Image (cartoon, rainbow, N blue to C red; front, side, top):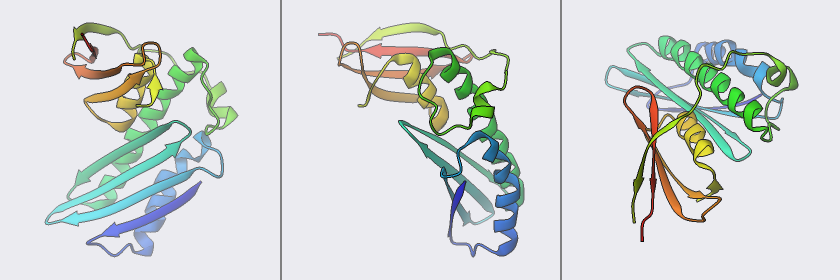
Length: 175
């Protein structure tokens, strides 16, 4: 993995770099050696924030964490990224999508599938082409509560959104 570390209102010390390499470096078993990991550290008053962005072919894995201590934020964000990757891997295996950025060991590792995506509500309403399930996966990887995308089947702009109870909704255009 190739780390690109930057800081906003903070000097990125060797100690912070070492903590990032040690903690986030644990994720290298999931990626190919040429995968880039963008790490941004920032400080605002008592808020110590870390943002991790991992661009992959067709998708982005992103997480951020804020605490009063940067080392705690680093520990917490690693757990979030790992959880997102496991969830994403399950969907890749199910949908047999391209997994070019992931190592073969990670793809072959068995993981129980307890996070199946089910769209429970659909609305009619007047980007990159993808199906709604892929949009839900992308929304989860970004950590957002909704995601706008171009439906690959209909070529219409759609929105998926997160509902209470860890369910998903889909908004489709109506003319």
